[in-house]
Length: 213
Image (tube, rainbow, N blue to C red; front, side):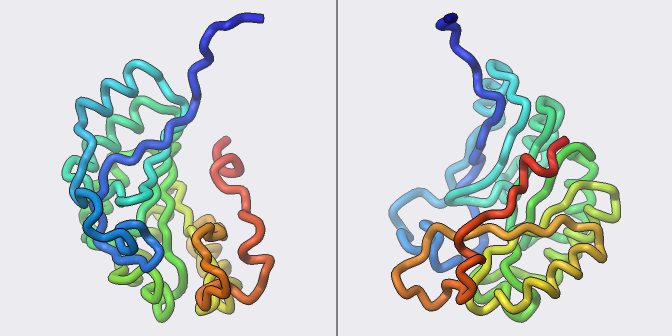
């Protein structure tokens, strides 16, 4: 049996701690002031990592931040897209004009995936994603799908949005947006935000493996 080191094919990369939202269960909110909120990975650091490893799939998703708020986001996305089979970018999608999103979709490839975290319709998404602008985010989602990009709507079920899931599925389907449920792992005991339907916080729907061909 060979002892040769097998390099991983996937990389989860958090490029920044910047974010505009104030989600109640996010460490940025619950542990506010305990870390530098504006820490960014440099493009040179990212290039050095990618050049040495040649990952097939790269996921840009934040535990503390949102990748679209990195000062060099588009330049970084371009590099990552050019140097991977699939780049998946998770974002709350807020705070960017539609022209920025046009530049964004022109930067990444049609093979890549953009996952928008939107936990509700216009009247409910802001209840958890505090400061999220639903209208502008949905416009960005529709634009990507219209341009032929792979766009996903990621929805965390809460007690205040679980009744809207069927309506959201139909809305996503109408605009060729992939809809996906994602369970939360941050529930407190007897948490009032926990969905009443237990099926909505027990199992996740398969996502990345399902839509990567």
